[in-house]
Amino acid sequence: QVQLVESGGGSVQPGGSLRLSCAASGRIQSIDDMAWYRQPPGKQRELVAGISSGGNTNYADSVKGRFTISRDNAKNMVYLQMNSLEPEDTAVYYCNIRLRRRGWPVWGNYWGQGTQVTVSS
Image 1 (cartoon, one colour):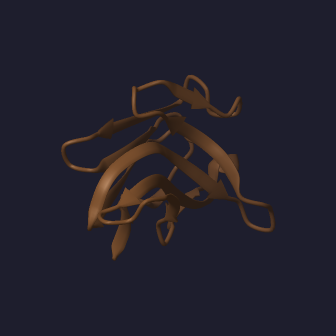
Image 2: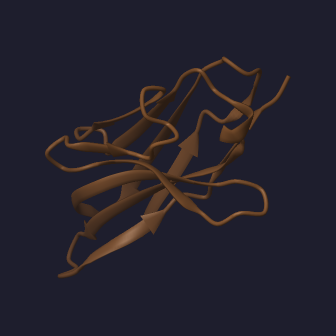
């Protein structure tokens, strides 16, 4: 079994900051790409930021310069530092990790349960 557990969501005022964390645990052999997605109310899920196993990052245009994705390979964790938050950033945020389970020959995409981020004055 593999579990992804997110933390760090909450409510902040515009201009504030939050740091999301996602920890992967279980019988994990290897981890490849890691990413954060979000789903605003009434909208489809969208990619926010991604980071490869080599540390290369990519961001949605709407968050460039405000959000930073990072990872700790030793701890099987991925983070999302969110600064200068705007009401438009309000959404449920999900981590997504591509990994291979111990004893399994194939890679799979796994999702966290989601954490709510609300930006409002």
